[in-house]
Length: 139
Image (cartoon, rainbow, N blue to C red; front, side):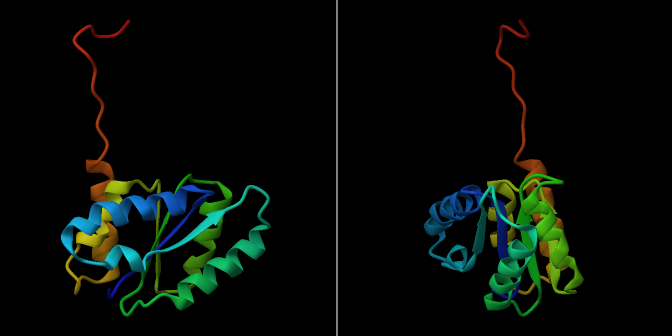
């Protein structure tokens, strides 16, 4: 996988999203979801320790063309950790992760550059959100 994928989220969301991606992606016969690295951020994490752990994970990730870091909630500790990684020119961050974003990133052509994967993943996240209302309408 030329573009690496890392999920940094509140514990246990990062691991849960990877497991879901593996479940969905396993039907394709492609093991790319297995290469996702995750950091489940505990509630008592020191942010500087968190940044060091995130850097360690990213450095161990195979990523010829950059890394997309998915994180959950803007302004939270996991998001702050992810955004501190932007001093590395290989890193791109998408906040507001959902399963649709991850599956879309996995589905991107293997030769797409990180910026393109980031763009399609964000589009996939937005496309994966829908609101519905029953026939009875609002109550």
